[in-house]
Image 1 (cartoon, rainbow, N blue to C red):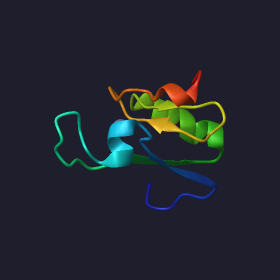
Image 2: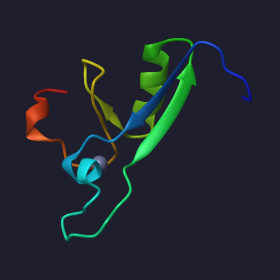
Image 3: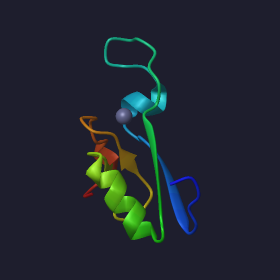
Length: 76
Ligand SMILES: [Zn+2]
């Protein structure tokens, strides 16, 4: 789809590694990011979840597939 109307989300992984851009062995890494478009937030969120991402209920945080959830998040 070339044109979408409605809603779009850019999700940036919020794990410790992506936020600091340093992986556990000290190498620089890129923050994981994905985006989705749809008519509603729920539609976008469902699309992003279908890629294996996790989104927090308060819509404040996103987590890339296989990345480690920061403790400060509480329940997703
Ligand atoms: Zn991450």
